[in-house]
Amino acid sequence: MSEIKEIEVKDEKDFEQKVLKSEDPVVIAFDAPWCQSCKITNSKVKEVVKEHEKDIKIAKVDTYEAPEVAQKTDVLCLPAVAIVNDGKVQSKLEGLPRTEDIKEFVDRNINSDENEKEKNEKDENEERKKEKDETEENILQTVLLPLQEMNTL
Image 1 (tube, rainbow, N blue to C red):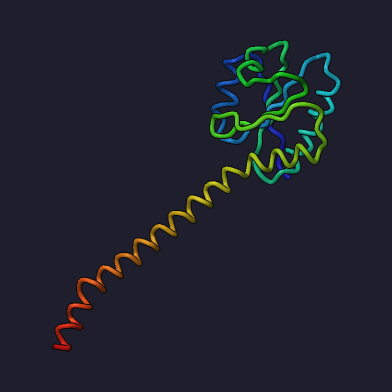
Image 2 (cartoon, rainbow, N blue to C red):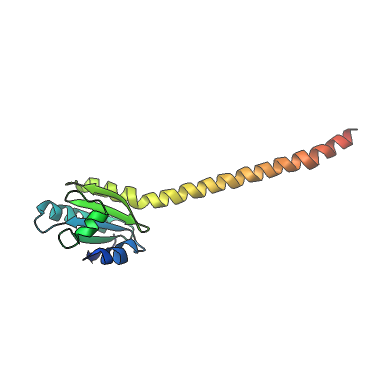
């Protein structure tokens, strides 16, 4: 379990400095004072983030105080949850999701970066192995086979 690091986003400048430039992934919970469903979703988001093994921050964005942030992230309805990783909004979830849906959403988007790194490492290793095999084949073709032919003559 990780400790919840909550960020209050007041405007677009706050959003850029505290969310987009964060070294840790950030789950953004968009809400409004009148939105009761947002309060329910926000508590589910906190529960999911608290149970997650990675360090994840939560940014709370009041769409009345910071409408430009909601517009910039294409939030069309409330409640809405978004994930920012490496300075980019990776994905968004709108409506009233179940806790399981939020957990799956967070896992898929937070761990996707690790999965991509693993895939890239695997691809690089396969490429190195292929290059090594080709080099060995070239040595065989250019050095050993001609030597063998010379010995048989």
